[in-house]
Length: 482
Image 1 (tube, helix red, strand yellow):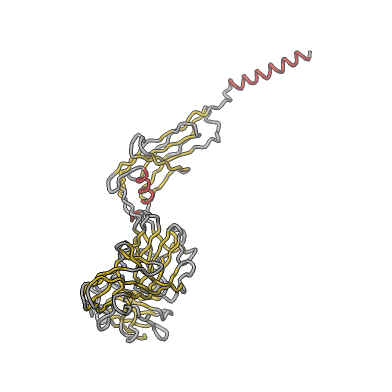
Image 2: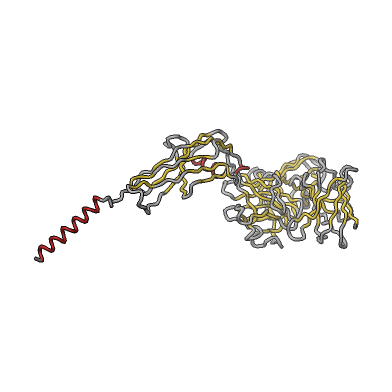
């Protein structure tokens, strides 16, 4: 009897299993449905100015997993890649970007880098094909979307050159200064000389790929960031104008500024000769009387102050300055090295240390006595192009703050006027943005404008509103209490 009951139990279990199988309880994963891919444009011409801007976006419909019973869910995940290639059948180099969303946007820099990765030719139109590839597992063949094409003209990224951009207290891009720094290995470490016209001068650095570097606001002076979301601010120089040797290290995200306060050259005469900085050309010059023409061996030494992340923008570290020969050029060195120059004649000559081009710093001697910076009656000349306005700025807070703006009076050429009633009364300069000139006052005649290294900051006595008048024709300024 027990045996018969056991047989019935086994038979019932088998029948139940068979019923489940017939009822379709086995669920099969069949395949993925493909996406519909779309692009926001079919043509993009790239340049460095578009590096941080969105230039194209791709969007697509959601893909679903096809299963034998649509009423039953699945926990299988889908991995999606955006693929790009120069060939429509994707038989050449393919760029793959993983994504979990239903769209992807490319900045100019990202699209230019992608184009370079797959072998696109710079400066020429390249048809780049895009598609989606989705898969539910490592060994499962992907399902592809439709293919879209975009005509892309990439640009050559010169990563050897960093372009210095003028900025202000609002970290605005005021245009290129004409100064460049150089990275010989194209590794994001740039260096070069710059002559700044005023204390707390503001700059930004643009790389060849379009990246903009400035101060990391969360870390402070001499710390760098290229992330606008990291409180990116301008890079400001310390409170001393003049010539600086700058190193911008984007790898370490920091920069440094070596202020060259004095230089002298030995070997041209019996005594050393002091050099004078010509800010407009970033050259150090001096005149001397040569006893004869011929080859001379000279050395160049000086003094300066080093500013970096350790010192901040306060007091720099006293540092000796020395130059040495570097092939046909000259460069900063730990100790002064012998430099050979040719003196063209006996009599008046000019020695010139040219630091303008970071790839071609040179020392030369020319016949005749050149006019030294600051020479003449006042050392100032009326600007060739009169500006539309003049900014009155203060550096009392450690950065540039615009106090007011002066505009032409209309009655006399080169005369500007405006009012000011704020509390800041000192460390003031008058800035000609058009000609990149920062004016203070002459130390010997306070009513005279000066843009020389030894100029004094302008100040206002007393309190209350004042009317400020600047005459760029006669290089004078004055203010009256209202």
